[in-house]
Image 1 (cartoon, rainbow, N blue to C red):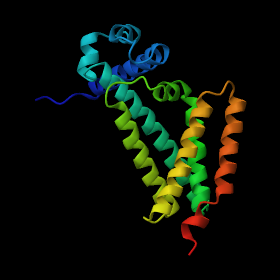
Image 2 (image 1 turned 30 degrees about the vertical axis):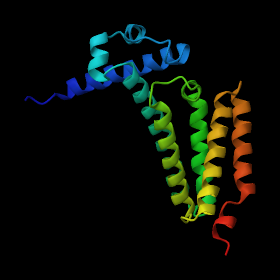
Image 3 (image 1 turned 120 degrees about the horizontal axis):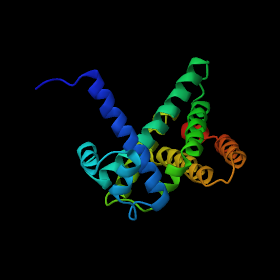
Image 4 (image 1 turned 90 degrees about the horizontal axis):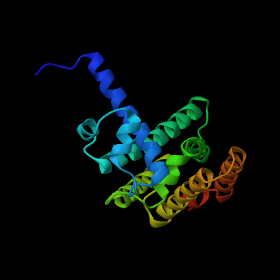
Length: 203
């Protein structure tokens, strides 16, 4: 079978990007249940056949949008932590805060998607996917904080992760960027006050 040329790959990537952008607009305006693929492809300037070829259907399109959103969150947080480490930061709590700050900034930048995904209007299986992602997020934060495996450690990290997640909801539903920034700063202050390393490592 002939290999695709770079032009063909570029065209495929652009088609996918256009469809995801159109889906973002349509799902954000109408929710998952009340959206239809015909409106998505009309905005993307494509065809229903092309959408099914690239994604398989409305459900798969919604999940692809979610995965791209989560990947952007993870990339921003990881880059922020890496930059902090490069700048000489070694305190795990400060590294967590660096990642959380980037995560919450992304919640404001993509607030339409955050609102969409917290609305509860998604395809079958979406809630399970969200819970699975949430558990993985807790695990990643536990590694960053150097938490052990006992119940208190897991609980502490889960609480911190929940605080960041709830802050993202508040940021995404803020009326202004200034209000969102205030929530972000309040979240950083709260993490500091909780001093997560103390209960994790005291003997």
